[in-house]
Amino acid sequence: MPCNYPPKPWLSTEQQIELMQSRGLIISDIQAAETSLKKFGYYRLSGYSYVLRESYFISKEENKLNSFKKGASFDYVIQLYEFDKRLRLLLLDAIERIEISLRSSISYHLGQRDPKFYDKPENFKKECRCKGYLFWLEKLNKKIKESKEDCILHYLRFYGEDNIPVWVICQTWDFGQASWLLQLLNSEWVEIVSQQYGFKGAPAFLSWLKCFNELRNICAHHSRLWNRRFSLVPKTPSGKDLFSPIRWSSNFTQTEKRKLFFYLCGLVHFIRFIEPESEWADKMKAFMTKFPTSYPLGITLETLGFIPDWENFIDNIKK
Image 1 (cartoon, helix red, strand yellow):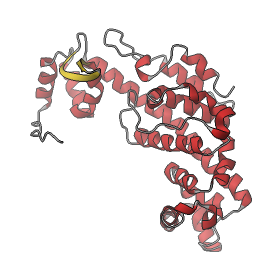
Image 2 (cartoon, rainbow, N blue to C red):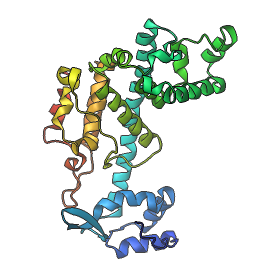
Image 3 (spheres, rainbow, N blue to C red):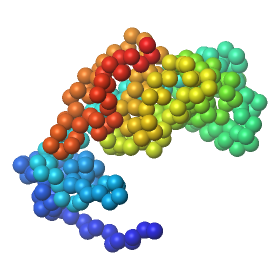
Image 4 (cartoon, rainbow, N blue to C red):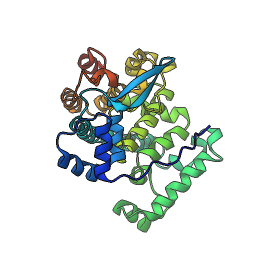
């Protein structure tokens, strides 16, 4: 049941600073703090200062007080914020590679079987044909009509809207629509694509795509990322995937799978199948070693799900 507390009052920048100081947050440069608050907003930054507040436990459940831990500073809040910003950009780079590769794999491998497979209901799960598939198709047709892409306009002009092959039409897809298509397709079609990324079956592969789509939206909408507990969890490899390269993911608990490190491992896995010589994993490792650790405040890579030998673990993914 909601508590229905009255909304908190509006506070000026000066009042926001006074409030944080009264709760024990060290602010050494008032003018710089005012600039940051006007640039980023108090409420947005509170997502980064929240972890610096003192805690108490009831039945092993952590609860936060309004007061800050000894040594917590506004400067450190900004360090976490800036780190998170660069982290999102790094992950968007990986997600872009996966998204483009996914569209290419679908158009090449499935287009080889049927250039217009997407237009045939029998290729989709029976339970999806009357609703999910029709909704996906409706969205697709809307995107085609609204598209300004030269390739789409060319095909519409010379071949008509009923004759567009998948390798052209996929140019209108975003990550969500490509993932959605695969969720609807029969497993035999999905497995043709999943095999390009170190899977043999469909369930675990599809669950990773859902997770990456959530991750993409978090990064694209500039949401807090670094210490997030993700709402979606990839499925544990089973059946055909028990002995596939993705089996490394079986080493993690459900709780660990909701943390950043596990998602980073998933990105590394996919990228190593897309670009075996890619340096993205090395770039990511170098970046994470610069994480603004603070042992007195309890902020370490371990809180993000990183294991003691995490660099070697990442190096051995896919091997």
